[in-house]
Length: 115
Image: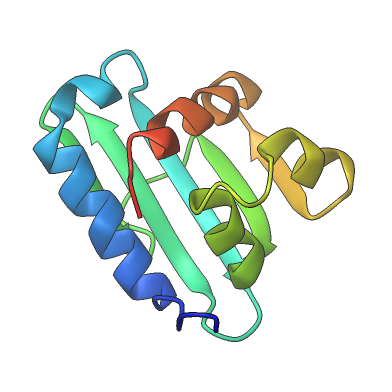
């Protein structure tokens, strides 16, 4: 039996909680990560890491440094560690615009979120 997956908004609420719970995980990863999630349960979300710590928000609050474009379901697979980010990128499931260096730091950040 497969459990119902959380909605995209619930996933970002968990990311927000994890960033606030463990601010050290965001050290050295300052920037605005924007997720353009397509398909059902998609939308625009941002992870903002600045001098105030980290937070996740729905919508575009700030100018992004890096934009990740993918299906909402693929994003959930990434966060659940069921999809490798490199494989997702190489196979075309994940498109990245902007600061590639920040995109590479994202995996470490998401690893601090436990589902």
